[in-house]
Image 1 (cartoon, rainbow, N blue to C red):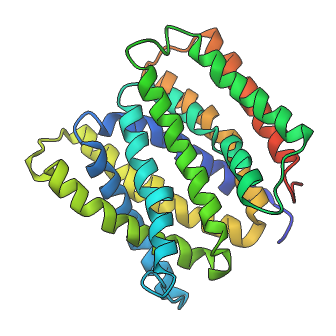
Image 2: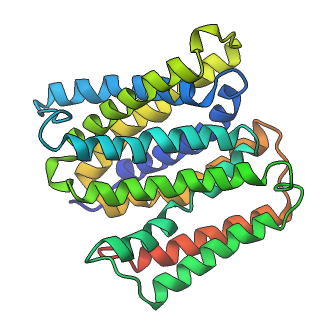
Length: 294
């Protein structure tokens, strides 16, 4: 892996910008689309560039190989479930709040890695980072303007979605030698298999009467925030490695707050800004003390 140059940094910032912007688009899409349908469309648009990438690079897609149970479980935990939970949560909370809550993924991932991996045990500094990061989340829950009796359940649902991302990440370690493109494409295919009948049976999407604004946001989520973003992620991973790519976690909540304030006119209190700083500090401490951090 090479040292990051200016173009690599540009791609990392672009990835943070795209993923940070996904939350206000999820919010707009939920005005017209039910959560499972929203997740399904995102997966469909993500699958197309992924399959084309594997075809171009002549990578065998092993979704239905003898390891199909691993791909299916990861597709369920790492894509289908969190996509649904994030859509449900974001429908009732501020979009920037969803971005901030989702940024806790490295924190919950570190806790799970301690118990379910051999090489990523916690130390005093990781514990400190986790406590600091989650204290920022707790501080958010004390702000009754942002989180109150009408929406705190949806904030918890969003955090649960973040936790499922971490669970999916831990499960992915079991098949990490299968290649990033293959694993991502295979698990995306399985997430489609789960989401398609669920959407048809539970939500009957053909009966929806969506607005043009919600439809454009959903298309953005599928084509840009999922399909294009994953291709950019592939490029960063292959050129600069996982450690560099994970630093996008610092950018997502910052962009999420920016878009929520300027595009959605969402109220930002002084507690939100303090919480954002505390969460980013916690993530930094955890990542600095993860194996291989540079």
